Length: 386
Image 1: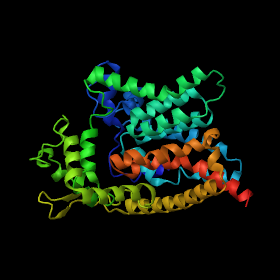
Image 2 (image 1 turned 180 degrees about the horizontal axis):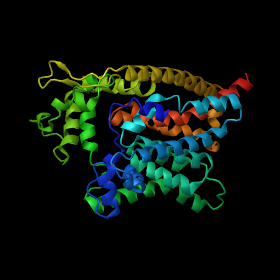
Image 3 (image 1 turned 90 degrees about the horizontal axis):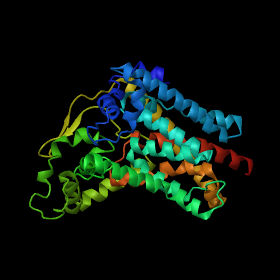
Image 4 (image 1 turned 60 degrees about the vertical axis):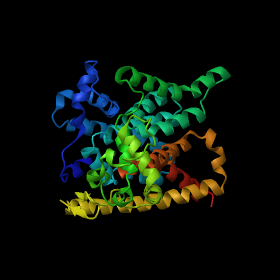
């Protein structure tokens, strides 16, 4: 699927955007913490393959496919296993994002390794790849910390050792924050978080997502000095964008509630990709008009979006049925002792950073995929017992 989709891509490969950061890691002179270093670390073995670094994208994608196949072995029924295996190649939007998003294929790779270590109860690999996953996309810290605390570690007889392992995720978070404080002067996991928070709590955010690309749509409304200009609230916060976001929430409660409802709906229930439309749409500086730029309504994009919509609709129906069976059969009570059930956690816990910041399909498309083998395993069990 990745090879097929690559023939229709109308955007450049962005994996190479990490080149400067990857080189700064090798020279032990990190340039910034605007984005965490996970994807840049993954680029290091392919610095010889620039400027597009397409070989790195294909390498990580194909390895992800292999590991995903190993995860699907939790399904014993061959028909259900085949259906689970098809979920990866039949998701054209994921393939598109792996090519055109700078860190998507790396997130997919680390999430697959993290999930495989999880179901195999390999604690060292679970911690390693979980940490690298969080260093690629910080939203996974919520799921990583939750799992590390409640995970059913095997072979533990000494209570003290067990408690130490339950604190391992928290320890890695503290180490990461202390490292950032030492190198960059701030414990912030990503220095872009303040700007992202301002975008996601901008007064007009409810008009942007899920329809339009938030970054483009709100570009003319992002001056932090205009938000709460006469307000003394949150003056103790140094990050002006984070302060502007908090002031926007305080001053625009109706818009905040509308935007939060849209985020929740987009994360769990929308079958369309978010943002729904490709192209350039902006709200004017006076917030009275929406400016339509290049719309990029090509047939490959329209058909690709339609294919993802069908995929997501089937995924959602299966997911709801599987959850209903888990709850009605009381199998949810066995959660602590079933390592494969923890495949649900990255997706479910992802709603927390989504509500705090924003929802786009690229933020959850990988965690949706990793739920598929579990859902089909549950549906196979429900078929056998009903």
